[in-house]
Length: 147
Image (tube, rainbow, N blue to C red; front, top):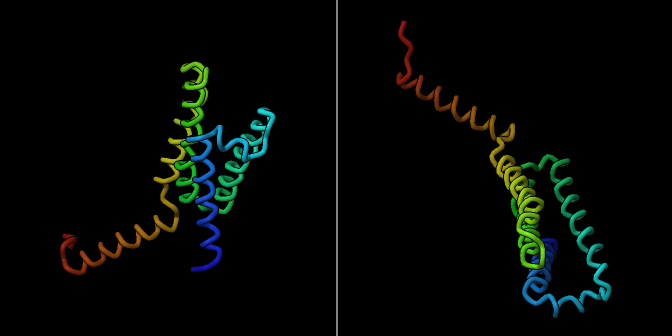
C-alpha cells in the first residue's frame, strides 16, 4: 500500500474522530481544541466552510463533476446538521428550516443533478455501444429495411 493512501485514510479517520468527538462529547473535546473564548468557534466554522468551498471549487475547475456530485451529496449533512443544531439549541424551527433546510434542499438537488449528468465520455461510450449493437442487429437481419 502506498504511503499516500495510508495518510489519506488517516485524514479520513481524523475527520470522523474529531467530528464525532464534538457531536457526542463536545464538552470533553472542546478543551482539547484550545479555544477558551467561544467567539473563536466562529473562526473555526468559517475556515471549515471555506475548506468545503475550496474542495468543491477544485473538483469543478478540474472537471471532476461526478466526484463533485458525491462530495456535495456527502456534505449535505452540513446544512442538515446546522438545522438540527438550531432547533435543539434555542433557535426556532421556522428559522432552521428557512435557512438551513432550504440550503439542504438546494445542496441535495445539486448533488442529484451532478450525479445524473452524463459526461461526454460516458455519452459517447453509450452511443458507440448502441450503434455497435445496431450494426450487429442489422447484420443478422433483425432490422432489415424493406423497400
